[in-house]
Length: 355
Image (cartoon, rainbow, N blue to C red; front, side, top):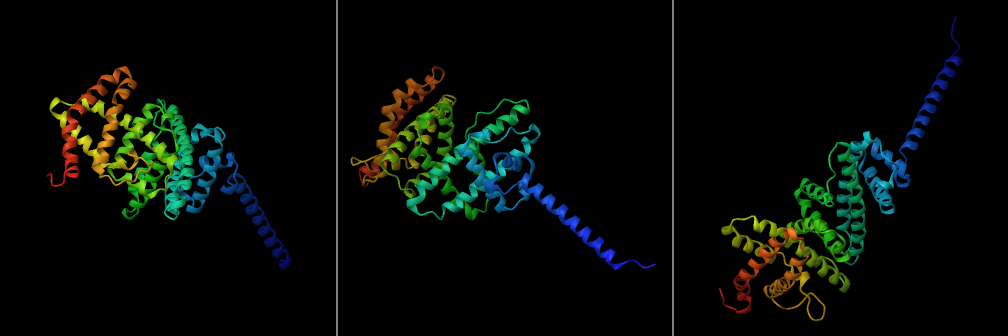
């Protein structure tokens, strides 16, 4: 008995149709759980972060998630932007957030290289807002992870900057300069558009040391790359002195811990550092309100130091009692040794021919 060919074809078509229905059903289910990032709801983005290993997705998908995630974070602060995560998902969320943070920084830094000089400040101001929102989200995530592990939350609001330094180092050396310029310009934009006085002293002290490290690498040149108006310069000047006060407190703690024989070299080393930073670019304003003036850099450095000495009594008075003696001690030693140091630095400019 022979089989009917038409029956075989019907079986084939039915099987094919069933497979198509199953594939379509699976695709619809998948896209409903993980919809396109550009239009995904907060709950859907939460699933992307909690249930997917984003290291296995394309760079285009990662950047699309970055765009949507920053939109949500700017609209709602921190973890409140998303449904409450399952504790078991926190490690996957953390891994994905770190990956997307890196994708965000590298992508925005590359875009910044193409921005025209006149558009740099608006571009960076938006990125500063994103960094603040993203950093708060990351800090809350880290705090929740530590609590789940039975640890006390860390009070590190600059955690993201630690990560950025590592990302830059991990990139090919040919990219380092452009990435660091983007970072330094963004920090300068933050200082020119935000009020550091709104931050607690602990955060200012942490930021001061990080900015000092950046200044050691030439970050002050960012002042030449950005177009700063009078309002920007005024805010930058005020913030610079607030951070200088925080930096001075940090150094006072180091100073009093040193043996007597190492204290004078320590002061001279710190003055050398400050001298090399080029702070006169932002902390010395001429009579017409502009930073550019023909006076030699060492003369302008002398003006910075003179202003610092004038503020020391206020800094000492504002220091908590348990740290006040250290700040006062460093201030007194600085006054005693400053004249000789500044003469060494400024005489060659003030008196030509002086060795």
